[in-house]
Image (cartoon, rainbow, N blue to C red; front, side):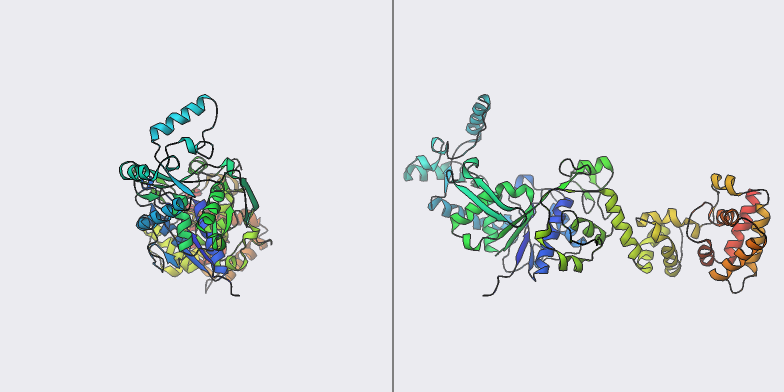
Length: 507
């Protein structure tokens, strides 16, 4: 017997920018699908028209693409189950809502918002929780209490909703891939609204189940916040007679604040100085939220850090390519407890990827910064600079502070370094090093280092004292890679010129 092809969906609502927790959900779906040779589908669940935010759908798609994930089907891609926006599928859902009513698994309710608010207030006054369930449904304004003739009349003139008829006192047990068996008694659950006549749109619960069925979804991998809805969804599959083809469920743990106390939110990022969105987001009101891309993170580093938030490979390895993640990923190794986000670790990931990047590629990223400063240098030269400084950088934006002296001679000199290393005879030593540098032909790193060190040793001078003064002349501060790597790249004329200028200023 052949196994059914794995089909998963990422189904966000365009109610705002995609949080990094949402990106992690997409990533885990993507890794699972690719590992099993399956399909990764994008479905936009936009039935909540009141909360729709302009630009959010485009943002979601751009974010997933930036991370290197491609959809097999969905919005912007197409496929055999078009359309993939729920708002464009609205004609589909009423049929299924009516089917549930006809089978006795749902009913029409005509309660007005005012009546429901009054009832809630009465329960609150008695310090009780109002639940629209088996205990009160027969006392409410519903099709359960009226003739067919009256129902037909009310459906024609009044606003109504379809509510699921939650079974009474039934134990529902569901096997979650991550959380094992989840058990709930239906008496704790309410009769959820499935469809609304006011906009002729389904709620999330009905649309979600119908679309997963019609799109042949085999696994639903989603956030922990949907765990309370799981019993209802399983009961809906059962009510439709689809239990045999119901997808398997896996509920991912939350991303937690850096201190581990509660769910990570945008406010935590604003407060502690890190982004919580993949890309910069500008809201319709003009508010700007930082993005990992704009903050200088490589997409590979962002994906890597997300993969390890709640999942581990069972090894000591921390750096994974996308192909390695696809090969190693398993839902069984996803933890049940929340995953604490560490912004410093996020920077560490970017540092590691910075070190691995080819110098030519880094040069192309650095060139726009140099051009803004009016500096024109060849890609070859800039690539050589990148090769010398990238080990010390976290972001491309760090490059100028780490390497400005490769492009502009120092105009000032670090006072602390001057005080510590510039002594009475330092000017004489520096001019001697300038002579040595001038005499080396052809000029290269090895010869310059050998000749300079031999002179320092033969004159019984302090290597640290002389070399720090030499660095001060050329760099202007106590920073940077090997002095002779710097000198070789700058060239001997530039090095000599900088020594002579420093001696003139500091003597």
